[in-house]
Length: 351
Image (cartoon, rainbow, N blue to C red; front, side):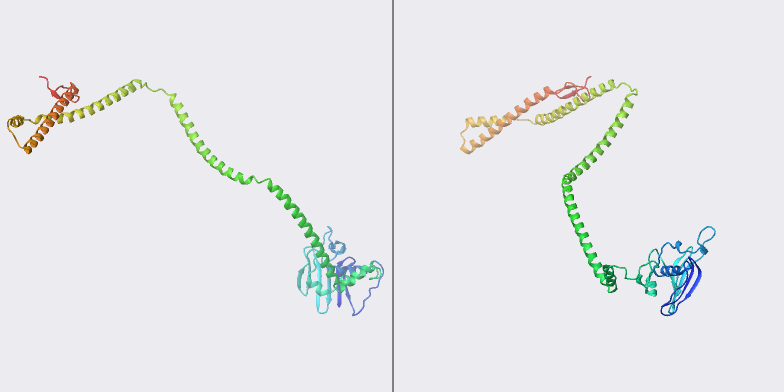
């Protein structure tokens, strides 16, 4: 039970203190003497209403510029506890037994609710109709439902139905949206093929960059060439002609060198053959002996073999002789090395 109530700077109360007795307390006085202001001050402490406390702030709390310069507060003593609801120029708070609790916007701290243990049923304004007597049967039933907490079931069922309808609407909207998205996705079926094209484009871009670099190098070379072509250089036609002649002479020398190598090889063979001496007197005697003497078969066969070897050797000699003659004809008349005259493949020094 509230023991005392102290009000500062609220409407017509600059600093008022009420001591309450156990049981019923009645406030008696003429109009406009602050009876309702006491209830408004208590309501501000209990319910944090009204939020715009300028309607409650007394004239004594304003300075000459119309700004609050003094504290407005309600102090309530209940049992062994004290609650202070106060607002200054910079502070807006509750204080319960020295513990500060900030009053934020429309909130009322739980500690304040537990301190008063009052509801809207306990607070009735001056112009309110008699309690329950002017209400409809439905409003009265609603009030008693709140007392026995049946209103919680109604709120739960109402919230559940509201949630169901909301979820149903969301589901239908989602399904509709899904169908729309599926149709939209059909328009983007070409994206898979585009990915392959993008890869090809990347490759082409890479090649294009390489070609661009080559093009830049070529353009730079062309510029250098054009710059160089404008300068005057000596005529190299004569030198080019001499180079061509030198190339022709070198080719002729290479052919002649090959011919000389062949001739040297043939000359060596000729010299080897010329060094050999062939004496056919023995063979002639053998032939005469064959004609004049009767021999046995084995000796005759031996002589035939010797004759065949002789004839083969004679043919080889004749062949070599012919080759020597042909090679001798092919020899140059002037030695390509020393420039002297040549005869029978040998250099002949002039006297």
